[in-house]
Picture 1 (cartoon, rainbow, N blue to C red):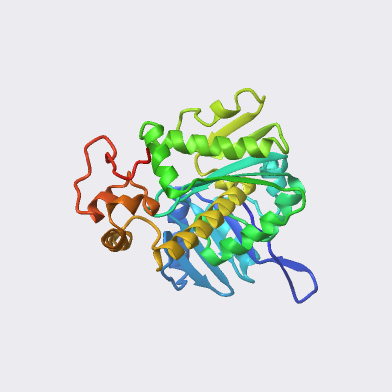
Picture 2: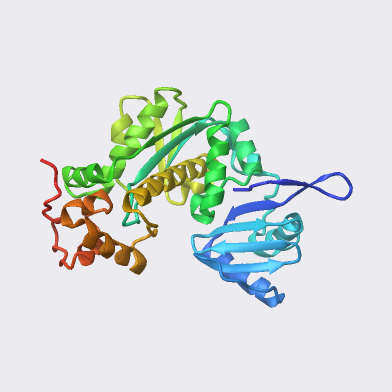
Length: 328
């Protein structure tokens, strides 16, 4: 997906200052070899396989394959290095030719918070068409996993204020999330499908295009079950965030999750870390010591192994914790 932010050049024309593209593993390796060979300075970027600072350009290649190029030297890098030496294809400026489906009216679906111990899972659906997509691409809208929280909130505001866009989200309180996890047979994919189905149906009630794209989290047609009577073609694929409308949904989902995390932090009275690693575990221990077992479900996803460990409990082999917190 190309994100094209215009900057005025010295001759009054416009140059592109941001570009995104999905690379194959082989292309990622080749990129690293080429830029290392040119002596480009490197830096550390979270989740990145390569990060280089060139003359007027920053190049970050993420483990997912997502390439982000930024700076006044973007156009020169793409046309003189990326296309001839890495991809072997001329792509810059040909997005509508190479990916015409991006500009068709369609729905994009993604979620956020699935891998975090704290906070809900938020599913989002965005329905958009060509003019909206062009504007978002020009603003650098891309997969939320490659963007800082501050940028996500700004981009989410831009998406939400786009004329004609349809946006719907679905999430629950933490106690309700834990209750639903049990209700859906301790199957996270079924719970995710229910949330996606709710967001999608709410959006389709306002505008129904012919098709939509879901960032795939299961091979089973679980979400399709919730729209089977609508005559709507819901497609699935991994790394679907290359589609700008799915990327917009990922940003809306993450921004909503960040907002819910802020409310959770207000409830806790302190900062709460993302993820489910050592920092999250330590924070869960502190919350457990302060509020006790009964209220842990107000903060944590109780099917996470980390939640058990924070309370000094051994996670059961199969069944989720038989909790005191389960509401009658």
